[in-house]
Length: 298
Image 1: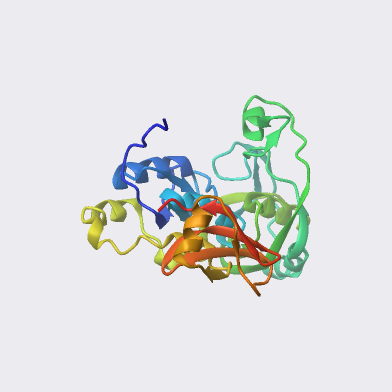
Image 2 (image 1 turned 120 degrees about the vertical axis):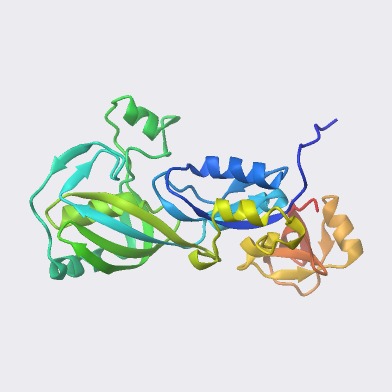
């Protein structure tokens, strides 16, 4: 017999504006306490020093997290010129200093070389696994780690503001797996100097935008009247790029039991099966048959 989950079955998404100092896992724990949700998870880790958009899936929405993790992201970040740190951000130890400060013309000239499909080496202090161990654990133990390069996609990269001689603010739109710490490090190296991130804010993850995000403090206050809370987004928010396919009630029953159904004249591909306004699950159309992939238990 399956163990009954504690809490309330809440299904949907929260767009949280993470504050500095909290890990993404800590945010999830706090939200579970605030909402008493049975299940919760985040879509895309934000480093503790970073702030901004952290989508939180509740209940059956956790089955759609992968679609948000793979979606486009947008960040605003501040580079502190002249200091390289072992973590490539403000929380690390200074490893190297440089008196070189690039001018605006030189910075603008090299930015196009960091757009499109580029290769980057992730920071040693990251959650990537090396021989079965998290890289940051090996780095903290003092091991010299050879992080393998990988291809990432950078759609846009621009300067927002030059604060002073030591600090410049940028904005970037990028794909899955892009490390902004690595991007800042590599920009500095190409300009003949060193740098680290002194600030990082995520302003978009797929359909989740900064202007719509709420803080944990605000969520705590608003959740005192859950029935009146308007910030719980539909489970299907993560599936905006997937076509919806209407199914009949008998078809929905078959899909929920793991069976396929006929869908004449329907093109092959991944769809979200819908019984009216109720999402049944993610399904795959193949040769005019609809096969369940992930069923939502709601």
